[in-house]
Length: 67
Image (cartoon, rainbow, N blue to C red; front, side):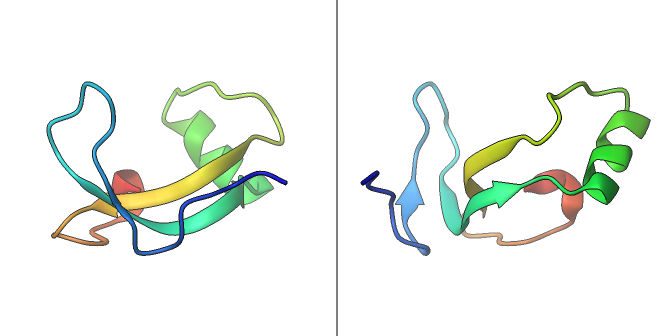
């Protein structure tokens, strides 16, 4: 079984200079989310799953583009 950090964990990514707070785990991009990402010109594989969803700490959630 894979070990994941709990929601609320504060992390600093390797090479980063701003802390993040994890507030979601095992996130799958929906069809609607995929359309929004493609509209911005970004490319990601279909059915992408991410281990974590995070926001800047201590700012918290600002908008969809900052998660």
